[in-house]
Length: 221
Image 1 (cartoon, rainbow, N blue to C red):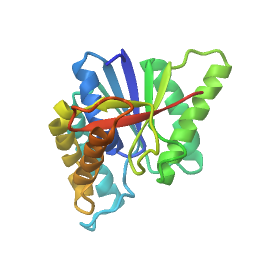
Image 2 (cartoon, one colour):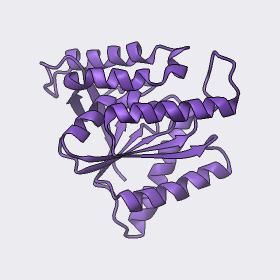
Image 3 (tube, rainbow, N blue to C red):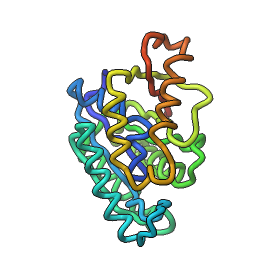
Image 4 (cartoon, helix red, strand yellow):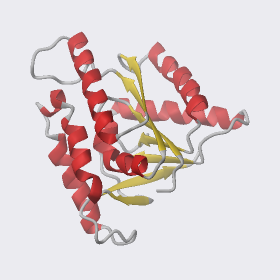
């Protein structure tokens, strides 16, 4: 891995694990400093146990901390927003501005602001891009690379592929830490199927020997 430091932004507590848990583990093993920024507290997630929003929020906080431990990430930042509507969107922009100046990552990872079908994912990523454009226009230092990871919607094309075969068990453990979400949707089987597909069908990028892979699309400011 070439990244010296990375900031991975998750709109919800499990997005990093689902979309790029293998690559995150791969980066930390290579010595990169990896920070995870989780925007919402996940209180409005579907739950089949009849928990209150406050109970879901506390449960998801514990789950993401456990998942972060599996991946070996250096920093976990929980913004704890209920959503990214109204004033909370401004809060997100202000907090992200502070985080990026503190962490000073060489790479940023977000869900795709146009392709991802989840509206919260798109809203978070659009806000992040807006802040970075403003920083760039003001002459501030910004990350050299912005990468989008797959969560809800497979990419029609991509710019980079990472063989995560060595890290698939770690990724599975990290996703499985989010037990409250697996109660109603088997994210583990779904995303591992996509990761298997990426490795098997990739030709242009050359990861033909790997069993599992994650792909990324690059954005420009």
